[in-house]
Image (cartoon, rainbow, N blue to C red; front, side, top):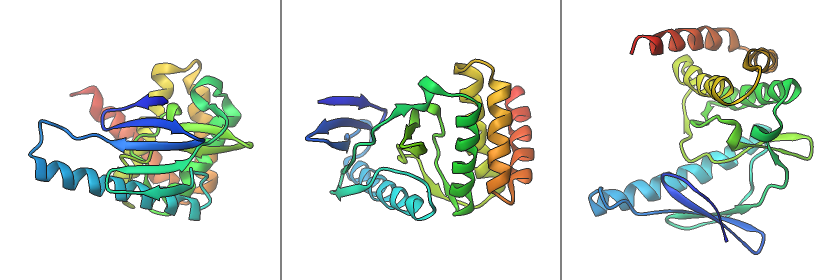
Length: 190
């Protein structure tokens, strides 16, 4: 049964297992398309597993093939449906652990977060990569802030709560948050 569809993949649920299949793109040269899909699938599996080692709750990868991941189904509610200050603070702590380990999620939206067993679970590492620069971390946080501002009530409170959790967990948080302000200012003039 199909449970989701993105720009790159179809997500199905079969016998309690989530399958993410990366689809071929007809606009790309076939050999390049094969390489890109395979590399992204492998990277997503690797980073999803690495994030768990950092104490970030993620789905357990059960199997991997060239273009498909099979993973644990995470039970819980999407953060986008239940966000509040306490949850946003927990998101900040979670992202702080991720950044401390040099992982950029790449798509930090409340749709890619689930409250499961009292913890924030990050899903969909399809755009993730390894990077420790303030710029990359700032863009990651900026995406989260934009999501709060565009889709949730009282975004200022949620951002403030995120900052509290993030600064508590991540020693370089101040530099990242300063960069977020710079990134936001750059966007105003595009």
